Length: 157
Image (cartoon, rainbow, N blue to C red):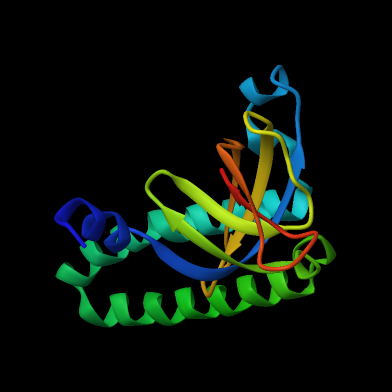
């Protein structure tokens, strides 16, 4: 394998994620994809955003007061447990099908039972584990290949 091929493989990650998608018209693809999310998905997204912002502040506090920082870390751990419990008990999130996907800088690839046409715009809803990180984004189908069994396809988005 030559150097460029090695680099392409290096930046690919295979993982199991919760994934749903739906086709959308080209007109809708200009809108904020998060506006089309269920309320529970948006709540989880907001909890993750707050946790991410607080980690930077926690590092700064740790430089000044280690005991206070340790206490706040324990509180953050409690909130993380509650966030995972929330995600696991929410019907919209609990029943999202888990799939093995390949993630790369250029997109995502996954198996499905539908062969979508190239250039079809889709709204993807992803839940990344173990942090329960929700993502909502638009993608465009760039390739469709026959899967390993009849009626299954490999979609590159």
